[in-house]
Length: 274
Ligand code: HEC
Image (cartoon, rainbow, N blue to C red; front, side, top):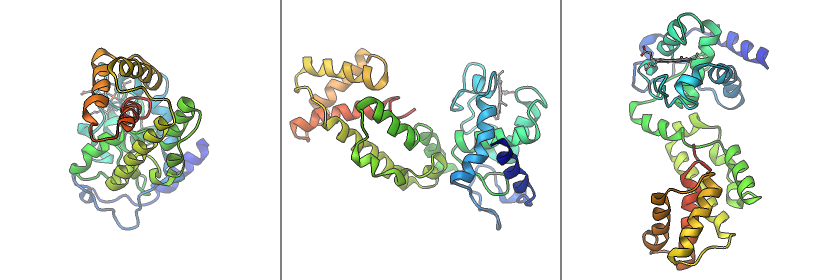
């Protein structure tokens, strides 16, 4: 596998890089001619080496966090100051991270790909670099970091319910390849969120639901939190769960209200999103 990574890199680097003027910092970059956004298997191969370095022993992840959210030891890499262009990011990493000239050349290229595409959700391109999307899209990029891959979501359903909701099973293509794809297609992201909600409603609909009385709802809200989130609900979370059923969903038929509440718990925390 590592030979596939390096061969893809060396063929990519033989293509002339775009001039830096075609990549204005912080704005939408048009794709230079002869260069294309890579997706699917090609993208995964390119990211593999970066993942190894980023998450490797005592490496970037320890200080910058699994998803680049930052820790007390290192800054946030989502939308970071050095992220104004792929080249700038590569240079900062190569020159300084974790100490000067420790991760240069292929190492810096690979981990820059990871920070660029996986952490920030921006596309990688066939010239061995990446393009940055418009500033207005950044929030969306942040948000896509919270959605797991289709495969992980399917695995979660199998674990939690012993089966995959039919509506989710039929929707694999809606999700496409992860982050970058969602990022470029906000409307696809919205459809995928809708699929997630429908799947959650379907899964909860097959379960025994509590009656809409406080004591029963409190017990169910506790059970859902422990089961879906793998931790007990705080008092505030439990109250919010109870009120969702008693209050916010009044426009739904009574039975649907409990199902909707269960589904809200299901999609709202780590079971289905990061
Ligand atoms: C020991 C902790 C530590 C490790 C390990 C580490 N970093 Fe950092 N990193 C930092 C700190 C602290 C800063 C802020 C430095 C500064 O502002 O001068 C930083 C800054 C950065 C920046 C610039 C962020 C910005 O705001 O522009 C990037 C990019 C970066 N690190 C990437 C990496 C990558 C990639 C790796 C792994 C190869 C890595 N770091 C490993 C602590 C760490």
